[in-house]
Image 1 (spheres, rainbow, N blue to C red):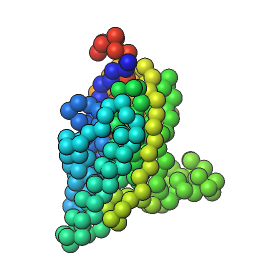
Image 2: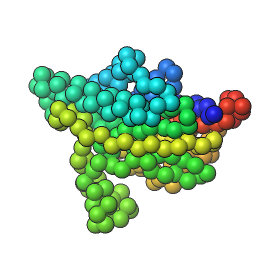
Image 3: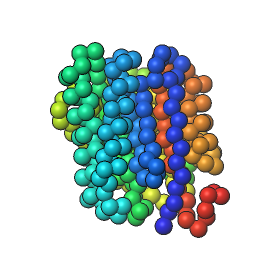
Length: 253
């Protein structure tokens, strides 16, 4: 049976006046959330915070069984749906934040060595295993749809002027399609959840290398954010990092 440790870090970056990102780790360290708000300094921060609040409250009120994959999947759909309706209804009622929205990536760690991930938008989840970084989520964005269609390479997508245009987010309709991704976790794996401010600056292989050179998730969070800042950090950047180890190893990994 695996154990894990988790850390989180967020920064407004070098070019944004306000941080519109939000993140959350549940007290039992089984739920991890990253949200990247849109809609101006007021609306974006509010949308991402509403999303965090909705997911946190549902975990407090109605959490799934820790080993029931179907329950966890249904919980994830319900959590993201509740968050979407919270953002949408608030925007409808308050003209000052009309049109606000947010991306979200939320993960639930089960007790059977699986992580279940739900996402909407271009916030991401990575699995880092043996110095290799594997992207677990597919961005809901214009350029990534072009990549999947074979019209752009990944490198072209990185510098495309429309790379920040997303095709799906929370808050723009009363319903939203949620994409689910399960992943089996092994000892010494890392999982990184992040807003797009991280991969805007760091390539996937850099993320894997930076994380694997750290001994704990606190160090990994700090290094990822610091390297993003050194690279110019044109956007807010937020990361949640989870490190896994065999239970008999304790925390001295």
